[in-house]
Length: 112
Length: 113
Image (cartoon, rainbow over all chains, first blue to last red; front, side):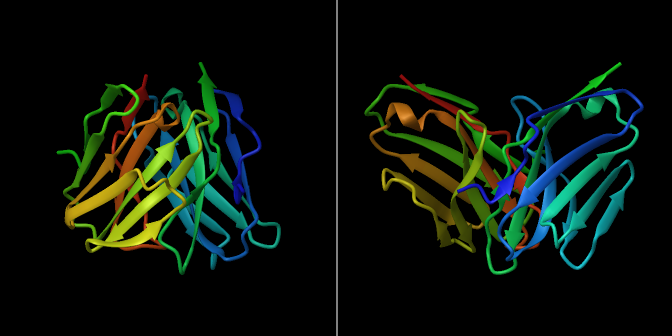
């Protein structure tokens, strides 16, 4: 039972444009959300997070938006760079829980 | 200076064998985890230890046994390996539990033939 869903398995974007990755969740107890980036043959690396008390968090080129009523979050990357080509995982946890529930990932390809 | 390290990176073995994967973190974190990434690329939690105490044990066959000799180490031992155990196994650590980022190791690709 996937509680975190990334419905777009892949995204292709031109260098310099915006990448928008989407994530939906079903568990209303989730209150902390994270995005991870993963290159082939490496472990996921933490990118950015957001608590449920916020609706936006920004870190350089990366911004995460949270819409709690819709149980939806998105990651915006502006401007996209070739080094951003990777798999991006959305993850969520509940305050009472130690584990992260991951989405299936979205593969981003940034075209020159 | 690697924060979360795993050994080996690749492991090829035959069905029925017993194998171990080691994990070490030098971040001073209290909590460590094992995740499995299957062929469909889903990352699923298997176990979590907090201060050497088991706090998460998902529905994993009891052929899998985690061992935490101290806060900085969490090893995974697998008995009687089966073809379906082939996957990439990731170790991770975090300062505490919920609400804190988890830092992942590079993964161990296990292939059972």
